[in-house]
Image (cartoon, rainbow, N blue to C red; front, top):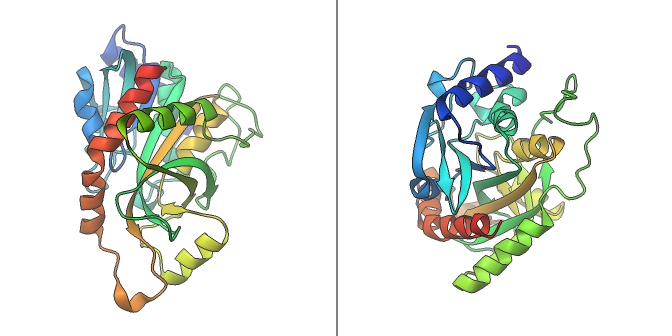
Length: 273
């Protein structure tokens, strides 16, 4: 697949569907943030399956649509379902939506995910601001650099925007919501982590573990987009494999339980921009 051609043809198709709307903010409605899509006013719904040469989300619970409309006084474009590496796509394909959103004009990207808590202080249902990450997925910038988007060697000193983190903390304080703040590590999946892997991740400084997000953030930062990220902790690590199992249905339930809090925070942050 010609990734550059796919990006530009997809962007032109979406532009043809949204008319005069010019999104300022991109949102990846990952686990825990699905309800935020319902807050978008008069959305234009564009199924991924209708976009030429566009990857289609196959993950359970991911609707596979772009939503373009207004939220908290801003024009936004939201992804109902992201594209995961474990679905079998090349890593460069998983970030085509972020490149498309850049061409549509976004200046900010908000991402969310469900994550396992490797930090022993975390509990199921906690919300964690992502202040940094460790990327164990292939880097989506491998290959010829797309100079029109950004430099060959982009700086990743501050992958998550400090001003957006401050706004999130202010919004949480006003709502009485307690937040964690930590480092997110991404793995390929689709298997959940072994106890030994959890221990290793904790040892190297990861507070939460998931299977997504970091490629999107890398590509956004390559393009000069400010990023805010949040994880909902849907399960917690145990060193003794005899007393627990990781169950996907339990993870979905935990993410859904946090949906109202996370959606409210994201809406508040966007309103403050």
